[in-house]
Image (cartoon, rainbow, N blue to C red):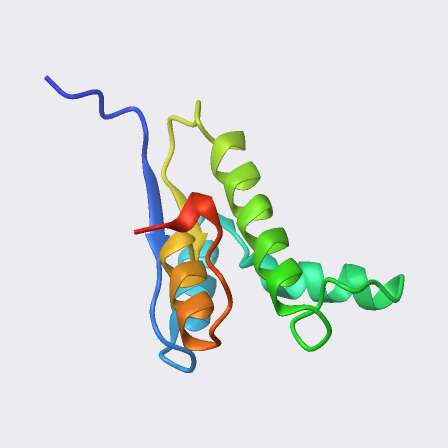
Length: 109
């Protein structure tokens, strides 16, 4: 039988599709929710006047989001409870393609 101990769920979709509302409701129900990294990264880098923001260096911003997503995902490898992720790697691929940002070797199709 397949190992069902890995209970990670990624919620993804287009902007303004209600993802954040769903995530907030799930969080209120007591599920562990991992926030979308974009807001955190933007806040952190604006605070230090960093370059890895979408309007300064979109490629670096994409790489920082990918790195943070991979870190958060790996951090929850041993979780026995469901973990809900607000967005995931498919969103990074769509972001890259939508804004003509090179995907990089990790995201090659």
